[in-house]
Image (cartoon, rainbow, N blue to C red; front, top):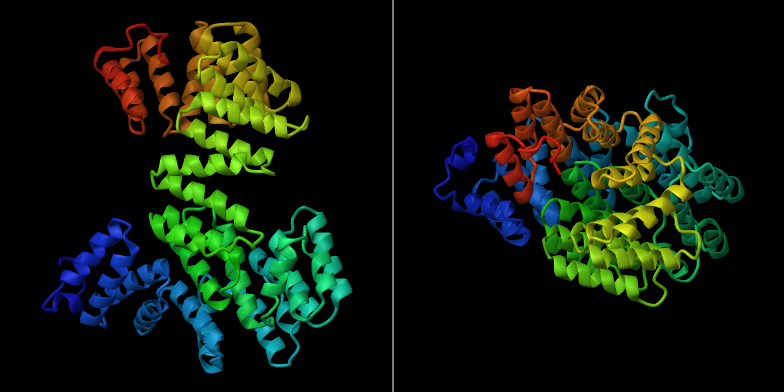
Length: 523
């Protein structure tokens, strides 16, 4: 048990910990939770075991294990910052004022201190004090100022200043900088005070299912629990596209502990669990979103991503097809189905799905749909139709670099209309000079036309901007080989092979061993 920690090392049986680690690695959350709970029983003071039990308890939604492990960690010399935040949420839910004050003092020393003015404001609101005073203190943190401003608006609604606070929220939304969650949270506060009409007026698209959602969500009174769950929702949303799944899981699980009705938290939790490999638990979380929820459609879409990440391709495609073909399906539904088909190299069907998306757009289809359809048709071997679709994309967006590059590159790779195609890519590069893919396209266009002096510097620049790109490094290797820089060519091909698929890898290994054969035949 090397590295397992002294307390665990002293236990007679460390098998529970080993089983937990194995289950954790396999993404078997339920088995891992049971094994970590057993390991924590065997080593109740071991911080390493407690940390793993805490993380796995959050993933599984096992509040008892999570809280027990968090308290072990809190008694140690260095409590992880998110553990203090989790325990604060427990204290807020349990209305333990002494623990709240102690934990907020701990949080003030760490990375989550930007939340404190807003939480203190809601604490003052609950206690009958001035809720706006904590929000008036100057701050050097842009994040803190953002949360302060938003919670000032929400507190305005809670304290009865509905016209001014609603106007401030609408004004912020009108600038394009406001988050739709802010308007919905404001509507929930109004619904909790019985102001149904004002709630529906504030919430964006507050019709049908959303009205029912406001009635359901409005059953709880706003206070610290409400505020902390919303702050966790906002932070988790900010992290949704970052490599921070562990923190996202903690924030969303904890937010749901404070507000079990918030389906927005479930969507973010399911996505984070899936990215962490806990696919079955992610699907179970999505299944908790009722059909009456306004987020039911989004839950179906997220479930497709979960299934795809889990390698359950046929299930994902079946679900995407059902969504794309159901009554009332949108252009976006068909586009998402096409994207999934294209990602799985089913290009004929993808092209048909994109055609459906274009038809549903009823004349307002954007250039992205035509680019996607053109690429799918090209990959399916329908060059003439592909060329027409790509030309339509450029007609719709003549200054869009991706549209220009895609049309130019497709022709360059076929050796047709070379001068005009190169001109398209040059325009794309002028518009977006820092894009490695477009820079590569231009360098490759020059190379295929024999202008190596201009090609090599561009390909080098592209490889520097995207060092993990298989295609760009292969192009650079071919160009190096052509000008006699054989050592550098093999180095570039080695770099290209790091993320290559089986077919690419075989081709690259032949080049590394024997050279490209024909210098211009990299693709």
